[in-house]
Length: 619
Image (cartoon, rainbow, N blue to C red):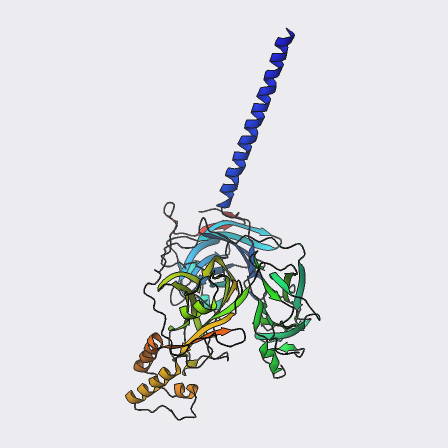
């Protein structure tokens, strides 16, 4: 009996262990499935990591998130002083004509939300496809919150295609009730434009080092000038004998209340060949600014409105301090003050995170595109003139290490007439991938953007940077140069490991441009000034810009040999023959990517939704 009892008592013990084992096994399987599932899920509708003020007074505040699995953007609009409605939307360059809009309006009794579009005259129309989907509307002590979503691509010809790069957001506030959507007069409402990068890259945050320190580069108590645009310069000096460090991250520090005025900021390191730089705190365009500050051009950090913290890859950092490095930094802040506020004080800047534990690689910054020279010119009256700058296979062959370099971030740059910029990597005569592109580029919104995918460049590869310009409002040729009225075509790429190659840019051969002037003289009654003392600018200014002269210049840039600048950081070219180099031969170009459309679930409603204090009555 006793032995039987022992046997019986052992059985429940065995079952308990078995059940426990099965339980924990199932639990682990569930956790694995959960982790895998979460990796592909969209962000929560109430999670909005990105935020930007839309108007200069911050009455309208936009937050958003991006779901790449669903190809959807969720928007949250905070209207701090709700009136009788608002317009929010997107257009090619911030116009209110031919725009894609989400509209909230009230007739004084009821409120409505609808997906609309404007024609070339600015007249509003209800869209037959309601692709802006209202999810929630509710009031709080802060104001009115609207939460809605929209797919990147809807394949509705009236809708804006949300893509990588700059997005021009437009907004308008309705001060009075309106009887219908069509009764809204866009030209009579308070409205504006804000630029952001909506499709932020989905990059995991790298782990930061334990010995990390911070340094704030901030302008002390600036009284923002009462004018629309100000560039403010402030000099900072690192401590004596500041050792070599790696910057691993940086983020903006914005004075509270000035979030809508501080437009963008950059920190530059000065040239090491100068022992000292004058301390300066004032407008960058002031006649009192010392000329030596122009030698502070090496970018350490750059931020633009709507951007988040910038992280370096775990294996690389940007070196500063130590031997051969200048201890002088220049902070530049762009204040955009369209309402001309007076007496605003600001101490904004950038916080650098750095470590003395150097990472495996130094990160580097390389300039791609066109040399700053007037031989690259854009005729007046052009809607979309293209210029291309090359980093040739010959240069990458001699200047890059056998294992190549890895580009992880990029800052595109032109002056006032730039409209599109793209850099494409080619290998063995075939375009392989886009490094960075912006089809709605604005010179008023420039930031260093982390790439969604690291791009590896090997010896023998070609990097072509193409810029499109619009000079319809100009009556003289626009030439390459440093002035804001001149033009540039540059991509500052951030990469590792750092090499000696700091500048890989091109320009058309000067002798071929002179042949162009000779040809124009032969076919035009008016003679171009070609006297020895005449500059390229003077010769271009005397060209009669008829259709023939424009087409010949375009053709010249498409076939003429180039002068290649394959330069070290010392501004000395790598050994080799760099003049009259043939253009890289590209035999296959990348196909244009066709937008993928989200399938419609049932026929979308063509009527607006009736909104009542936080809930949607009609869907």
